[in-house]
Length: 107
Image (cartoon, rainbow, N blue to C red):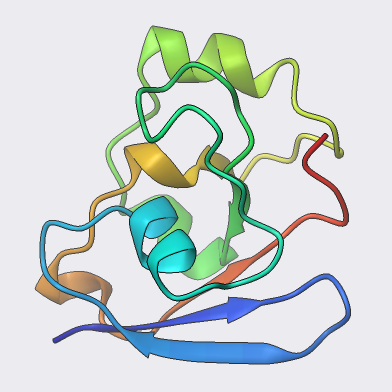
């Protein structure tokens, strides 16, 4: 089970073992990680699961779809080059040890 660490807005960390195929949003909301809302349930329609992927791993992910990219343009916190919607990033074995930083706000 790949391990993903969420860095909360206050700097605290939550490390979780997530099932392969789960999204980063599902991992966060299913484990009550504060700061990831996932209001649309993962249908890529709301951008309340915005996360920052660690720099070293961001380039290894598939690029955002056109829909994800459009939603990232309207996120509540600063959009960065490593911004992604957690509902669109699926956990793989290769992502074991991934660190994602949560923005200071989602809405």
